[in-house]
Length: 314
Image (cartoon, rainbow, N blue to C red; front, side, top):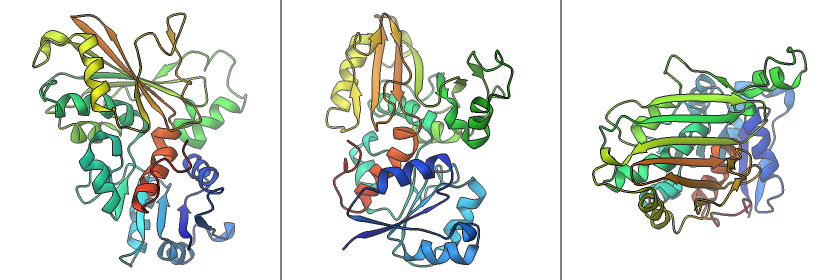
């Protein structure tokens, strides 16, 4: 018997990626809505309640409304929006963070997929706090470089239409300079930080790919760790993770440069640790549309349905 799946909002970037990843899965049946009715609440309600798993690839307000349309206790919901990531009634969809996260995802009815920037950030910070290495009061700062697909249809159109002046988009551009990016609440809450990080995202002229970096000073940790010791800690922490790899310091570099796009098309997240005994730089590389969005959603679905966690993702 096949598991039924409905993607509410399949026309968006994440929805299209999900459909591509799921359409070849023989154990799944994708429920499709008539394109003319995709905004019709009654048509959506029918499919949401017919599905074993419903993916919400919608703006926040629409995702909240979609949840209200589900009136059975069988349909399991995976939300890719920001709407429920800090809701204590929803499980945070990052299985590798801990054994507890993975097991709660397996049994949860409602799972919120992490934001793409937040995925890189929490992969770095959560283990350090959980391991008693990073004080919750640490003044954390984070920089993230992402491809423009993370900005959705409007930004994709801006970069790909050819209507902008040739030199306007060639250099990376910082944004969210009010220091109030929508991923900050989950970054702070999930990692149990006492204070909001300073988070500076930038978008570059490439479609997909992401590098998230966090600098650390050894003297400010609970115990003085060198870069090598931090790398060893991550290696042990993530040793059983199917999709998170801790890389030797020289691996993945091209003549000293770290490419943001090397994990594209995969569900991998690669962690790099650079530095010395005093200063440490941790970098997470991922596909913002893979482990940062649709890949993570599929991974959670696999766990929730009792399937192999890596199914359709290797």
